[in-house]
Amino acid sequence: MSIENTIAEFKKYTDKFVALNMACGMFSWDMATGAPKGGNRARAVIMSVLAGEAFSLSISDEMKGYIDELEAHASELDEITSVMLKYCKKAYHSYRSIPVAEFMAYSELTSNSQNIWEEAKENNDFSFFKETLDKIIKYGIKFIGYRGYKVHPYNCLLDDYEEGLTVEQLDVFFSKMKQTIVPLLKRIQTEGKKPDTSFTTRYVSKEKQQKISELLLRKVGFDYNRGMLKESAHPFTMNFTRDDVRITTHYRENMFLSSFFSVLHEYGHSLYEQSKRDDIAGTMLDSGVSMGIHESQSRFFENIIGRSLEFWQNIYDELMEILGDDFRDITPEMFCSAVNVAEPSLIRTEADELTYSLHIMIRYEIEKMLISGEYNIDELPVLWNKKYEEYLGITPGSDAEGILQDVHWSGGMIGYFPSYSLGNAYAAQIYSFMQKDLDVLGLVRKGDFGPIKDWLKEKIHQYGSLKTPDEIITAISGEKLNADYYVKYLEDKYTKVYGLN
Ligand code: ZN
Image (cartoon, rainbow, N blue to C red):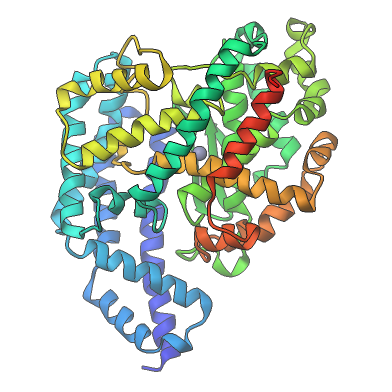
């Protein structure tokens, strides 16, 4: 067979697992956005069959044949084929040692476990979830044993979400965060002038909040022709191809800002997915490159844009038409101060920009222990609470606002949390260089998001998974991820918000 034919066959072959993964994603989307609960068990079986099929394709002899053949002609391959080969090779070597039957059993476990976690959270009782979680962790450890790792077993999982990321790097990253954030938080609490946040819990009906979602998405220019917004318990983004990207939010009538920022956050994810190049559409590269880069895009819209005074000035009049007389006494400046308040809290998703990384540090430390097998499942809630006391000075009063708050572990997503902090750090580094090319906040005040979106598309979005996180950030800033940009961003911002000298 000529190399051209091999490439064509290889691409057709990878189309199959793209399709299977997409079908799985469609079931997940459906389950999270209103499919009848009674069908969950049956759907879990179907999803495990589809996932098992995709898994088998990625470790088959046929795949091995393509890898060998293409590697022998590496210098003749186009860029897209080369990168696809890199991912297929990585998956093949990572997963070929996991027995398909075990992978399918694991996949069924994680499909069912989301409902078990939800039930445990509703009942505010970790004991409902602990056996399932224990099984998930044990599978994680077993799979790492099959896959192999360098230095620390957790490195194996970190690399799944952020290519090349290690415990060694994260230990340095988080210790830098801790050294900056903890003293800054202390100064804020002792010397700072605390903004008034009392009005943020005023009642805003779900109907009004839906109108606010529409306003926000209209402002930033969400492409409804290739996307949609629905409701789910936990806001998320689901991308099928760049032409079908769906986001969700949730409405809390005494906390309207929760949906407000979820919409902006998920929009950042969706813009990344919708802005990829034509020639990777529908291929296995038609997806953001890493969770860290993905979170940088969601955090950019949520925090850097959404919490700026310029953004609140821009949307103020239209927002007031929706909020009505209940908020007439609140100025854009008051909104801006309130949404930038920093104080220790229990719930990660509601945490402010400053304390957010402390929440992640807690999960990072616990996950390292779980994956090393150094844990007692019954004592996890106590361990969790102790760490909150140590880093944030507050203790959760219940499992629901403690160890049960996040969905991630129920889906087997261990190693994912650090990408949230990396996302914040990437966002600060990207923003620092965007400002050299654009008057970013001047554009935001005018509501002119086009140049900002074009900039992100050119430097980041267009590539999908074609370039690595390191290549992307180095092309923008001339260096790899550097936490100093983030530290400086936080210091500048909070010194200003709290009037510190
Ligand atoms: Zn996100």
